[in-house]
Image (cartoon, rainbow, N blue to C red):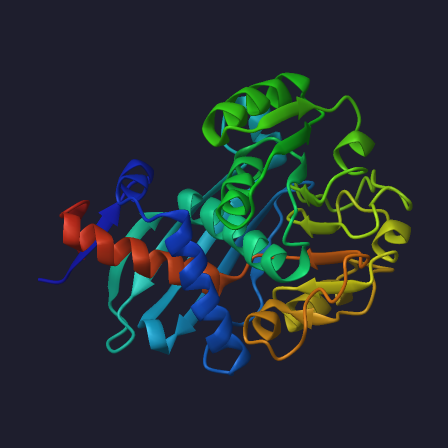
Length: 322
């Protein structure tokens, strides 16, 4: 009888794959990607309501023996229902037979791999001395992105903004304790942009961007990561960037065809090219740099393979009959 392993959200977290391990796996994936050795069609989805989506994200990474698909939803209004903004399941398959190996909660992987991609981009595009992070959006992604950046930089301060001031206050209290840094709540968005070495926008992905960040806010020499597509950024602010990168150029072009990122600068490089050192990252302390990370299925599948292997070693999960 064929069986598959089911891993709940709690069990995925209990596997204890570290952020450093996720970063290392994603770097390996990006090297494979730029070499043309992964298969990853653009994500496809449905949009049941305003600013809500459910996406199918398949990928295959032969070197990692990782094949699978993430079925993920993002509903901004879930906060009002006491539900998480992002939910999903990930199915990992045996690449040789196609048989499903594991079904696992995808929320943990989505959070960790997104933060890891930001840290990878920052390691090539931010100043090595970066110590002050501006975080716009104080939810799950705000936490995982700071966690990942703390793996790469000696952070001293985070300035956090969220329209929900209570959420920002909780975030500052938690992050101050977790990472032993100064945490300041910003009253308005500009306070979490100007004066920061690294700026991360981690709010909801919106069909119509509110474009709060204006031209002139991002300091000379700063790096920005847009986890929320172009929701926070006014096109004029994005055009001030000297080097504009993304995690996947074809997928970025696909979104532009759908009407996103209008007025964005031309793509300088994708992360695979930076990781493989095919192109230079930051070249001086004055450059403004930005990475628009769209979130890749290959990142999820790489992370899922790590989780699955560790779960087998630890005997975690529930075996189900097919």
